[in-house]
Length: 286
Length: 324
Image (cartoon, each protein chain N blue to C red):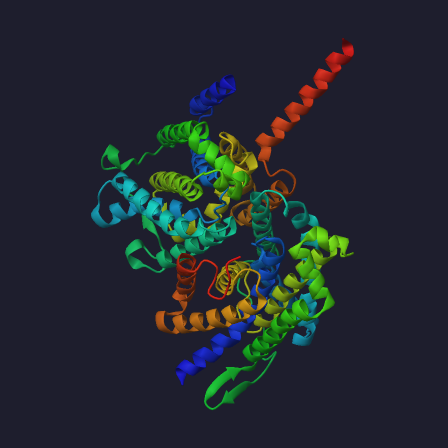
């Protein structure tokens, strides 16, 4: 029973990993840029939830959309202010740009909110579900369900809608897409908005049961790197499966090796995967 | 160029004789140490164009090794220094071998993941001091302990190490390795098609860089006499190397030294003006500087200076032609 309980918890957390990793892999697949500030986007989503709950007394129905709006605005500004100018430049400019941004956002949050852990009241999404002896907290269930729906939604949007085809067209061949009347700048800005909004919602949803602290973005970004490396370059379905898998692996290793070493197992697995299957467990060779 | 180098060397040699007092002596030693770390990072990050964001792993290993030797066997910390270098080289192989088959992003992601992995493990491992860290000898027993009250002996040791790194970098830069690295940085695919052994030369750059970064960590531990997981393996250790090299100019010989000459006094000033609570603001500033460099001046200050010089010469040339 304990094992099933741990797996259920891992799957729910894994769905949230899938949501913010899908945004990272989308940007990577479309423009070959790794956003080192992606974990900070999740962190900002958490603080949006904290501010909404503390000062506006709103619930998840307010802070979820609020995080999406704030983060998509941030994503678009980052695209036009930084990424557009470095994406076709030397790789050092791309990596330093987003890495510096991560540092800037992390320590701005540090300066604004202090280093202390903050938590949200635990009766925001009250209740516990009992499925045949497996106890699942409603906050975790809500976060996992929202994340699963949004990740699948993102995949459907990319593969089944006109906007999705335009996004893919820009990533396939920018010039050809322009000849078809697509404006690459708008599409890429949209991708950044989507990616950041996903990270923001993921952050806002886990804020209901996770600790909120300025440095949380670093380990979340690393988790997203691992998910993307497992799931393969630019693949949203890959990110979904890998996210669930990493969630379960992390929960099981927290149980077996203790909570401190759960990330160590995941990072070691990352290096191991790079050795044996660099294209990812689910990816194809590009 | 040769005159400039001579002047820089002379200024560095004379610094402790001109600016006296513990405050300036320590700042000078810190400056040289930052220049050593950034110059080491620069070999793989600048010349070979493989951006490591986890160089703290080598720095930390180098810093822990001498203090471990002292803590467990009461030997002179100096004896641990080569051990640190060897472990660092082994870790570099583990990180570099798989990722150098792939695009540069994978290397960046793997470096930060491995640095974090080591930081967490060290922070929970009692034999290496866990979260508390390790201390060096409080009182010098023999001169081999390299425990001095004044920062001046450290200053000259660091200066000698920096000279070795810069000398070696200069020789490599103008030899086969330098040409290969520049080719790899410009276009890996093109370099490979021309027969450059890309993986081998990326790994060569990483090994050199890791070895010297480990040495920088050892020197830090010898001077400070204390190390903990955050000051050895923390992400900010990597950040300082990157920003120091990037501000001065990645892939240039003296860029890291220039970056250190600007950043270390700046950091000393902000820390003494704003107190301990100011460190957060220092890193906001660092983040901002890195973003601005990436956006407007990826070549750093040395590249900016060169461009301004060319423009000024062009203008002077036109003015002369006009006058004639």
